[in-house]
Amino acid sequence: MKPEGTAGQESKELGLRRGFPILELVLRVVAILGTLASAVAMGTTDQTLPFSTQTVLFQAQYDDIPTFRFFVITNALVSGYLAISLPMAVYHVIRTGAAKSRALLIFLDATMLSVLTAGASAAAAIVYLAHKGNASANWLAICQQYQKFCERITGSLIGSFGVVLIFVLLIPLSGLVLTRQRLLPRVV
Amino acid sequence: MKPEGTAGQESKELGLRRGFPILELVLRVVAILGTLASAVAMGTTDQTLPFSTQTVLFQAQYDDIPTFRFFVITNALVSGYLAISLPMAVYHVIRTGAAKSRALLIFLDATMLSVLTAGASAAAAIVYLAHKGNASANWLAICQQYQKFCERITGSLIGSFGVVLIFVLLIPLSGLVLTRQRLLPRVV
Image (cartoon, rainbow over all chains, first blue to last red; front, side, top):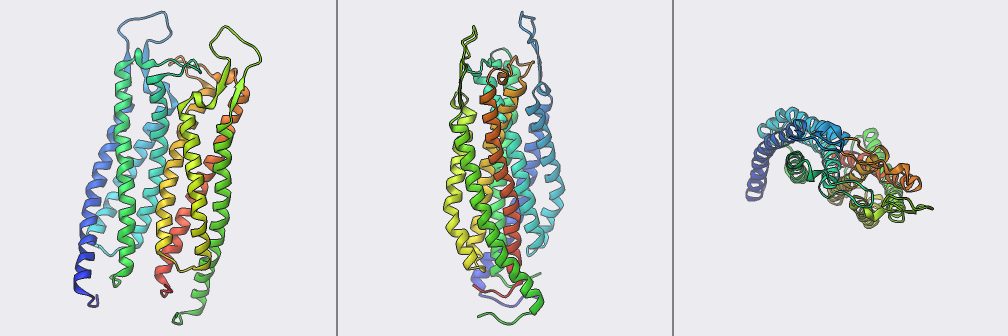
């Protein structure tokens, strides 16, 4: 049972505790879609040029480049984690006072944020190279030949970096809710 | 003033609260050295080949590749942040009960972990390319020509990934201390 506190302050705190879990649930569903879209968009990227040239290049697939394979794996992993975290998020909507499961979720979220950032930024480095090339290293901008391939790999980064942003929002907000629970009478 | 609690449990908790801040301080100093070493090692990388060939390549510098510039910037940034965080870590050694500043530090640490992971993994993707090349994209393994350059850029990754590991250790431990403070009588 909860003892009586200062009414105004407490109702404001309770609003944060009720409203945030619902926002969290929505953001997690969006994040699942984002990472899944990224993984699928990258994983199905494949372009065959309609002509053959003297160069070796005539077909481009995402798994020609190991970094893109890493990108697909990290996105699939984070997407799976997010799906598993959904029941926990639902539990937080019902039990707004749950502190330990929220702390656990913050740590797991932070881990997944790192994994996803690693995958997305490694892929971004290669995509940048594909667009611009590098004169010093004699690496050609393959995008000049493989436009469709390049559009696809560039687009697939959007979902991933969007989810990075969602995590960057979710983690401190979740932490804020956790610290506010310290100031409230304990419900657990 | 602190009310009396269960003696054994409390002394164990107090051990965690005394011991961890000192470990944290040491790890932060190590992390400053790690990121600084990475930034300097990468930032001073430069190799001129002792002969000229028919190819365009004859000199390799770290800032020929934008990703390496990003790597130096992120490492310098994290190193600077860590230096600024030191006084706060010292404060935590003295005031083991400080909760708000610890929570703030966890968020800042998590942000810096993401920034550092992004820089390190983007650089790792390019270093991998420099070593292995990519036959499909016709990108040559420049390491065959620039061995000293490649050893240097590969070595500079070590410090960065080491500090990523330190953050991965620090953040959950710091969070653990924070949640344990919830179970203790409040000292603040």
